[in-house]
Each structure stands twice: as structure tokens, then as C-alpha cells.
Length: 335
Image (cartoon, rainbow, N blue to C red; front, side, top):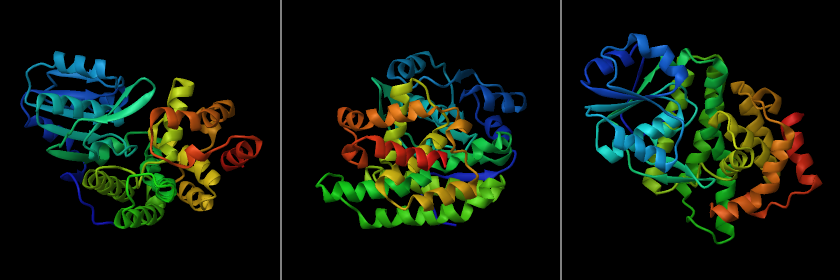
């Protein structure tokens, strides 16, 4: 298990109810599924319940304006709940507690909010929670497939590190950092070890995955960028959302991107596939409700998308999508 840096984090069972009992007037930022799991056990009830989902600036600023007087903001749920809670905390300077319901995204361990708008993602704000509370009971209440899908933002180091090296060779920033590049490999080694534990839904697998995400969040802030763990696999996901007008679980979408882009990079796609298999993470498009036509449209759009959005230089910039590339991608996902 890695020795993680980052936000104060506690692990255990039955942690959420005692937390809110001592907060006074608090506001909950959640989503329907996790809120249904916890609402009846929380006393006092929140002064306001906000259902997260819309991460456009207009909606986030509306929520700030409508926020009642309160003593704390508590994010309970997945990435959109974490990001919305961060925005409210940052804009109103209220104490923040993050309670992830899934290990599906590193949003609870990163400081900016992923604001959506104009078909792109912009990272804004600076949120530092009092504590991240990982309640194994809440996570165990989620479907096991969603827990296994949490590997995406660690597995992404596999393709992102390759993209960073490619960008460096092309004279594109951010500058190469040997320590961060080595950390990418460390995270992948740790992910390979914890994957069977996560596949069985064991608390220790969840803990070790969350510690990877915690350290990644700390490293992103220390470096001032996420180049070592965000590359063409994430850009594939952003393009998928822009092309289709919908999304799937973030970790699963990024995992899909890793499998496709590592094959197109000729970057040891078998290692990525082995980790996905050991974690039993859903990656077949049929299991994710994704059609091949959507994947093909995403790949065809990807080179122009990354150029238009000004995303970091990666394999996506050099991609020329023809029959051969489409066959490589299809084989990576459907074999």
C-alpha cells in the first residue's frame, strides 16, 4: 500500500451519521441513489438538500445564491456531488466534508471543480475539505460493478504517462517531471495488486484505491497540473460526452478510453487489459450500454476536438482515423 499524501481522510463503518450530528445547520449535496441509502439515518436533517448533476457555471452560481445560512457543506455521492460541494464551499467559504459513495473518481481529493460548458471541461476554484470520510457501509451499498469501475482515474496513468512523454518529445508542455512520471508507474503497480480485492468488494481494496486517488490529488496540486494521470484516455471521454450528448460512470468511461488509446499508442495494452480483468471492471461496450457507432464517431471527432479545446498534446493530436485504426480500437474492446 502506498504512503499517500493529501487531505485528512478517515476510513471506517457508520461514520456519516456521527459526522452530521455535530455539524449544526448543514447542507447536503448528493444524488438520488446515495441519498436514498443514508437519508433516514441522518439527524439532524440537512437545512437544504441539493441534488447534483448540472456542473455548468450558471447552475453552480445559482446554487451559491440560493444557499441558506448554514455551518457546513457535506458532499455525499459521486463526482458531480463532490464537485458541486467544492464550488459552494469555495464561493461561500464554508467548512466542507466530502463523503464519497463510490471510489469512481478522484474529485473528493482534488481542489478545483470540473465546470462544464461549451462542450468542454474547465477546472476552477480551490477547495480544501476539513476531512474526506470514506464510509465503507455507504460504498458497500452501491452495486459492486460501480465500485469496480473506480479504477479509471488510476489506470489512466498508463496512457497519460505515454502521452506526456510524447508531448515532451514534441516540445509541448508541461515540462517532464521524473518524480511524477515514476509515480505513475507506482500507482499502476499498486492498482494491479489491489485489483483482486476490489473485484471482491473488500474494504481493503477500496481503502487502497482511495489512497491512490488521495495521493494523485495531492500530486496534481503540488505539480500544478495532472499531466501524469490525465491524457488521451480522458480526452476520449470528454469527446464521447460531446459527440453523444450523454455520459456513463466516469471511471468506466476513462477505462474504456485507456483500452482504446493504449492500443492506438501501441503502449502495452495487455497490461491495461490485465488490470481491468483482475478488477472485473466492466469494459465491454455492450455491458456499458455503448454502441460501436458512438465509439467510432468519438474517435473520428477526437483529433479536431482536442485541437479546438486546447487540451494537452497527446496521441489524440496525431491520430489519423482510418479503417486500420478503427479495427485496432474495435479489437481492443470487442475481442
